[in-house]
Length: 274
Ligand SMILES: Nc1ncnc2c1ncn2[C@@H]1O[C@H](COP(=O)(O)OP(=O)(O)O)[C@@H](O)[C@H]1O
Ligand SMILES: Cc1ncc(COP(=O)(O)OP(=O)(O)O)c(N)n1
Image (cartoon, rainbow, N blue to C red; front, top):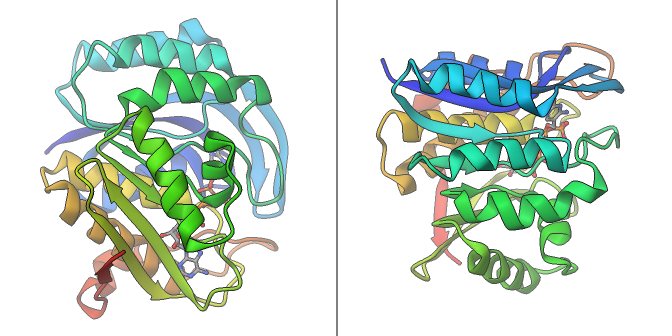
């Protein structure tokens, strides 16, 4: 049993954050451990409160894991402040761990999960340590300062991000709502570029899609899959979780973390060169 770690915020509603990550890890047969960066009071209708954890205590949680477990992969999610990013980056820079950075900024309801002053710390301290960076389109715009409207814009933003670091950048297309597909754009440091295309599912139940996708990626890396295969399987995991949604709550409901185990044989991810 391989051990993986999520460094993220708690979502009391269970669809995103630490809760989504641990459910995903469990489904993919890795042992999930966690470093909690913030508590949120949250449900499918939105975020009503955020309580950040002190940076020193965040480090204490991480050290407790590192001194005991052989951690195979780490992901970061909601990090909230520059202090928190700094405390995590300080530790990660001395470890050679596969690291998935999901640069969480804004929840679906519009609540801010990353302070404005923390964006520069994310860019300069965390991005260079990432193995894979998974921004959605607004996050890629914020991190690059470039406006994204077309596929060419996506390519340009990815090249800017690859200069900062990472073996791979995945710009997720969930926010391209005019499209009939949910296409994610994958760029590797060696120049390869892919598009992963799946039909866009007409549903409100997309709370925690980014967290779930990056957690699946972390689990597959933790289980030793090559990076290319981990990316395709993670896309399959999130696609099935959105397709077989659970219809819970009164707003943007969660995805179905059980679906991959039940339906994985029924789903083929379409990958082309971009
Ligand atoms: N309506 C949808 N139908 C199918 N896939 C979707 C849909 N919305 C998002 N996705 C997929 O979910 C994953 C997370 O994407 P996105 O929603 O852009 O991230 P975030 O939650 O960080 O905003 C991506 O693989 C994206 O293509
Ligand atoms: C605690 C916490 N972390 C992250 C998010 C954002 O999750 P994401 O997967 O980007 O999904 P949406 O919130 O955009 O639906 C969150 N809401 N809470």
